[in-house]
Length: 112
Length: 185
Image 1 (tube, chains in turn purple, blue):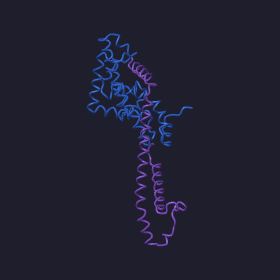
Image 2 (image 1 turned 90 degrees about the horizontal axis):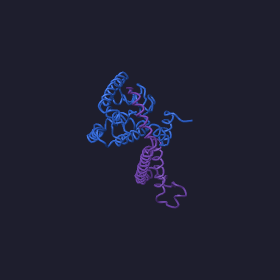
Image 3 (image 1 turned 120 degrees about the horizontal axis):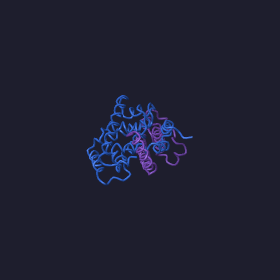
Image 4 (image 1 turned 180 degrees about the vertical axis):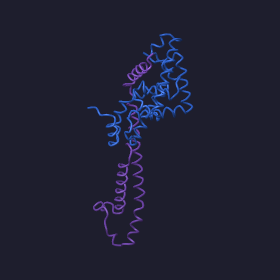
C-alpha cells in the first residue's frame, strides 16, 4: 500500500475543494477591518495628544513672555491670527502636534 | 510574471497594506486548510485556525527574515495555533467528538474516513510530519523548520507515521471491506 500516494491524492482533492470557496475574502475582510481600527486608534490618540499639548500652550507662552517680554509682540499664525487672535498660537501648536503625531504613526513599524 | 513568495513578503512589508499579502493568502490557503483539516479532523475548527494563522502571519510579517520558506513559516504558525487549540479543553473535546463522529454516518461522503481515522490514531507530531512531507509536499528540512524539530527527528517521525498508517489502513481494509477504502483514492 502506497501511503505517500494516498496522502498526496487525498490532499490534492481537499485543496481542489478549498480552491475558491470564499475563505480568502473572509481573511482579507478581517485584515482590512484590523487596518481600519488601527488607523482610527492612532488618529484618535494623535488628536487627544494634540489637544493635551495645546491646552498647555498658554502657560508656556506666559512663562516665555515673563522671561522675554519682547516675544509677546510676535504674531503666531500670520493672517490666521486676524480671525481668531485669542487662540491662534494654540491652533498652530495643535497643528504642529497633530503633524508630529501623524508622522510618528507613519514611521512606526508594523502593517497598516 | 508571477511574483514569488519572498517578493510578495517584501512588498507586504514595504507597502504596509494587505494587497500583497492577499496574494499569499490566495496561494497558500488551500494547502494550509487541508493540512489543518487532516490534523484536527474538524472542518470548522481547521478553518478558524487557518484564519488565525494568516492574521498572525500578517501581524508578524516584519519578523519574517527569509531564513526558511514563507510556506514553512506559515505552517509553523498554524501548527502552534493547532497545539494551542488542542490545549483548550473545549477545542480538545471538539477534536475528540470529530474523531468519534467519523464512526457515524454524519461525515460527508467524499471525506476519506479511513484515512482520517488512521491519521487521528497517530501522535500529533507523527501526524504533522507525515502530512507536511507526504501530503503538503514540504521537504524534510522545511518540515523540520515548521515543526521546530531537528531534521533527524522529523525523518524518524515520517517513517514511523508511514508504518503506522500502512498498518491502520491495511487493518481497515481487512475489517471494513473495499467500499470505505475507496474514498481515499
